[in-house]
Image 1 (cartoon, rainbow, N blue to C red):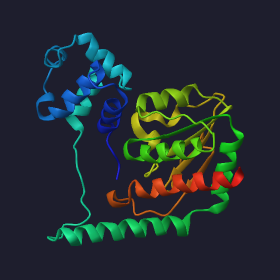
Image 2: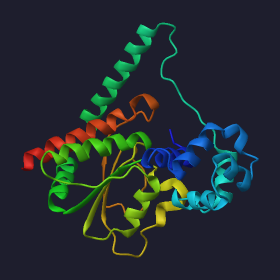
Image 3: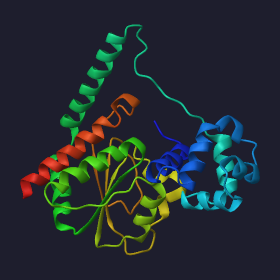
Image 4: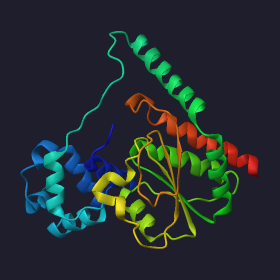
Length: 254
């Protein structure tokens, strides 16, 4: 289960921007007219959005694209797909089946998470003054849960919904910073060849919280992993549970 770059950058732009702003207007229009956008030019798109062509170009840059050409490529190649978990004819059975699956996914985290890693991550949160937590799309709910929980203990940490702003923060962070990434599939740095963004610099300490065990970029300092089916039904509930566990263990340090 891997989201394409188009929903990553567009939905984060809509969520992060003030309603009615130029960027929000452009992103909303494009997502609402995908079938008509594949053969459109920048001037026509600008007219349809009631903005100048330069605003379209600026929008592309600000959401992390190289320009209008890359936007066109994404519009040509992206397919939106939702995978339902149960197709039972009974709504009661569908509700029960999904609920049981979510419960099982939580049990999988409980049985597989490494407690020593969990404790080390919470200690790092306590020790670092500059802490940020990020996630993409539904994974961002886990970031907000952790931010909210830690605020109750007077520990302020930073987060941002925008994919472009997240990447910008990571690029400009240094060894004074701790960054926690919630990524269900472990694919956070797979978008737009971001796996080399911290090569050869004073880099932050980065923890990746994920349900996928695989090879990660060398700049990832450590991982907190758990067993997962890697399906829609388990996401983001497993990540949300882990975020709550981190907050719970942080409370033990106070």
